[in-house]
Image (cartoon, rainbow, N blue to C red):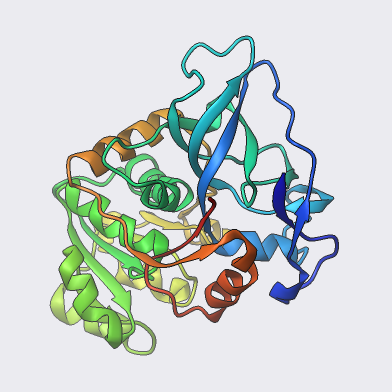
Length: 310
């Protein structure tokens, strides 16, 4: 089968090659998925630089990618929740990095995949798992956001941020989001009050909300240092970052997204009832994965980059 692989570390997307690889094996509680679409996340190319070797075992050659949407081809003997022909989506993070989702087929532990939203295209479904789970787990599990909250989201126009704004709104919160001025109208469309990031952010937010916000979600790291100053005195510690564990020294929490079928089911339901919309910036063929990485590395993408597989 065809897959994208890299055999050496590097930060140049040119390390990616379209190659022939063996079909994946299926464990007793795994499924084999015919991949229809996957999406690009910054962690994909950060792993390729060797920057996460201290956290995860990596076995070269690597097929990158953790997001998937596709059709179940086969199931392991202990699997009872899915069967061949089911359309699924998931965040296929395994115990080691090697056989990822930039491929025609992928094997996936049953704990990582769920039935895809019935109203979603495969491209839309593939854009949801990692980014959507990250936003959901930060807001629902870590910050416990509710209708009495005012939440500020750093990096609100990106892939995770776009989901975070919509999820926070669905929980009844007032939502503020930082972004470049070019993305302020987009944030308003999502339901957030936009603020330009960078110098003077604390003053701008405090002018609008003198008592401060009740929760902060950091998705880009740029304004993490001043984030405690954005919080109301009664909400100290309601600070979460997915970027830098130093947030723990500020009394907050560091979140690294986990595969979770129940959370995927919640996201699917939100998409199907119209609560959650997917912003796809651009789609690429599998052979053009390097181009997709280049765009992701530019740091100027609004929404998600998707790779479709015929």
